[in-house]
Amino acid sequence: MEEVNKKLRYIGIILLILAGFFIILPYLFMGPPTSFFSVENGDETNHTVLIKIVNSNSKPIFEESYKLSPHEKVIESKGLWLLFKMSSPLNKNNYIIRATLENNTSKEMSMSLNSWTSLYISITDSSIFIDTLQV
Image (tube, rainbow, N blue to C red; front, side):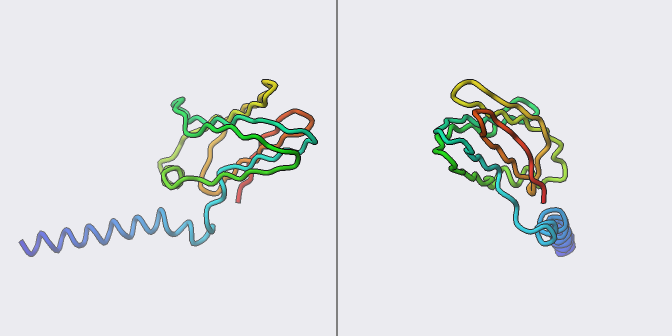
């Protein structure tokens, strides 16, 4: 019985070391995760923009509508579950990001995201621009 407890203790220690290597160590070198995305209205008029993000299995992970005043900026942070999924070494998901204005002007982009990738969505001249910022 004592030998079984020793083996379980060693397995627990090994699992903690692996968790530290794959989860905690990158945060020490790269710093805290970046925001999920930011939306900025560069126009002189109000805009309503719908942000929809789905994973490679067409499952929605985020959908929200924002009413932005001229030159207003909104920053959305990543949730804990999304951070966990993105920091997993097995994360091979591509995400489809779709931003739609009230006049049905939309822009869609497909990309892979991780804990240190942030989306930048800009509205200028009643059109949308999507880009990524990588640490």
